Image 1 (cartoon, rainbow, N blue to C red):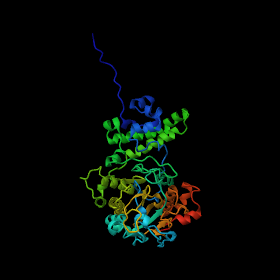
Image 2: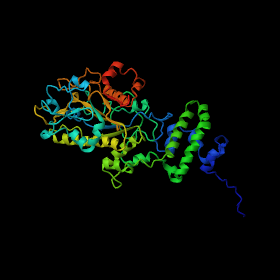
Image 3: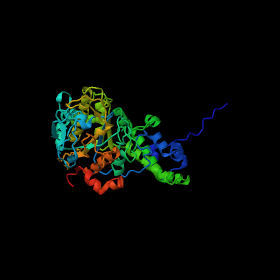
Length: 484
């Protein structure tokens, strides 16, 4: 019996050939042959994106067309000290006179582990007060020592403000996540979503979904396609595939989505696939912090350093936010619930926090970037003792504080004080002040100062309307823009 050998074989066109055709001229047969219709006609935006690219990049946050970020809104790094660090036992909070930048010491600092009358050294560009005899053995602030060790030269162009606020002890429920406000203000439209997961609740506005970075590969992996596409297509083919879908979204898919009753679907698909097309085609050669020798030196890393080490991960996060690859960078440090009946553990943790702060400030300096740093913690500690260096015995959120720092390579930022809020004679944050008794309002106050530093204070009312009056802002703003 004669075998049939004349069976017709259908030749499929490549993605590259389809890309050269007008989208309007592409037939349903061609689309089915390329395997594209199912992605755009039958799946929601998150499903399309998760199939085509790593879902950290454009994912239905996504579903919003980014118009690009406001270049005046500078990079932000947030360091969170989990557990309740003694921030007000390093920076020395003043009484009401501190609101205007005057030294106005309390009658005693015994509950803050600083004894009755701690010695004061004024530092940073705006003369912020830190203690010189409150640590174990009568040493100076461990946080200040760490900053000076790793970032001494950057301090001259850094304005420091201690924020006095009562806060919940040992709780991730303190609303210290600023990312939602920053994104709404216009710092968005970057290559990567926010890097590092802020363990705290958000303040006022829900934040975008971040990449949780445990190693450098988490960053690079967010910029590549996954699954069969990664295995079967080279980078050029991947880029062309996204461009095809981007164009398809703009015509046929929008009509299909509209016909199904979702008038916004076509627009959302177009935005999401367009973002992925931009990501896949982007130059990602400078994501690695070791690509800049001076920056790598700050962090003590090189090509032989484990990319999952704390310094390499922290350096990667800071490097990418300063190069505007992402909007906000978060670094979480653990071990700050250190009231264990000694001062040794707390001083060591504070030193490590200071070193991290110093490295971040030095990073701003070596990359010549105007930038903003926030330090948060959930609660505080106490060690009642009339002598300096009292041991830490328990939590004490009433003596809580946060830090904000603004760095400008052009010179010291404008500043009218080193303190937002003040402490009362009970050695606690005064709750009658606008931001003193409410962590969310304290973070909103920091956000207002960030906008003032960026010369965008006018955005306060559009981002957090009716949250502060103009009179409130006159009392809250401690940092300004040099050119304003």
